[in-house]
Image (cartoon, rainbow, N blue to C red; front, side):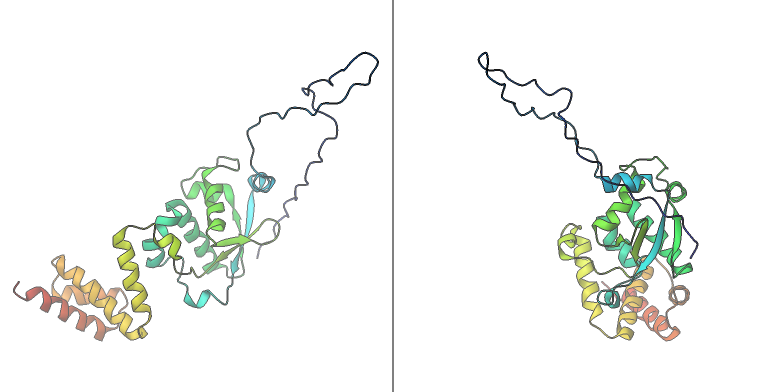
Length: 248
């Protein structure tokens, strides 16, 4: 992995002990008695970003490493899979989804990790390279952490999941009804044997191709291009055309 110059860790500012310049003067009592101090009125100020976000906004690079999770990884899917596009996209948003894919591509090529140039990546994703903690690209990075798909890994480092877990129920309820039903069918298929999963998927795709007007030979050829076994492609094409030929 390329050597990366460590990013300095910001130190917390000390709290001033003296009163602010605009604090009200001490109240006085009767002559000859010592004035009693009055607590200064709080100054209304708009809260700024936390120090952690300010430090993140100053970084030019991040060291991206794989997040290995022995518990969740066996049930996960690749970040570039159809599952992520169908179900996670509506939760993460397009910018964060494409960022997740870009990081996954990098980890496919550099399994031990790589250095990510933040400004260059932001421009490549069409998010611009505007600095600041609330810039669109920085918000996408924070969303990856907020949804448990990435986590901090030391100063200037980010560990990213290479296997994305199934969508939690609290997020699934936010999807449109059609996607919720599709997700239920997907979950049911996961309990089947791998060969049966392939057959069902081939039949579903073949049915869509037949409805679009493709011939049996065209459907079989397309399923072959999608890497289905020739026997599965042949059978799915036959069934799809037979269903389409039945009188209504």
